[in-house]
Image: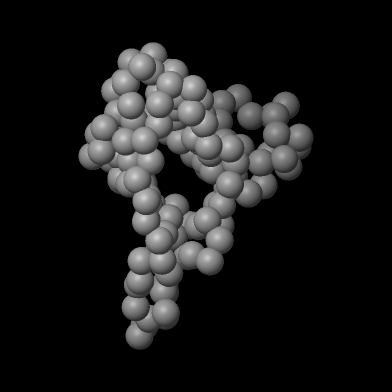
Length: 120
């Protein structure tokens, strides 16, 4: 990533998420941090998972200008990605990248741990 030498990573905040059926996290970013990491402790791949949705910063332009020319979308051209987490998955994203957690449809809890990190 070419982060300047001499900077040290610090944990700014951390919390545990316990998502029950119907829980949702609307589009958001993590201010005052450089990166956000989520580790999935418990999730079942049945029913509606409450997938992690990552939104491309230029999604409005992609949807408006490219929708009629793309045969299929991939991780480069998609305006949004839905990620179905599995236990022990770890996702690290820039804290400024808008994302959401889609509605959780399972009766089973989904448990994850989130950490916000900065360099100082």
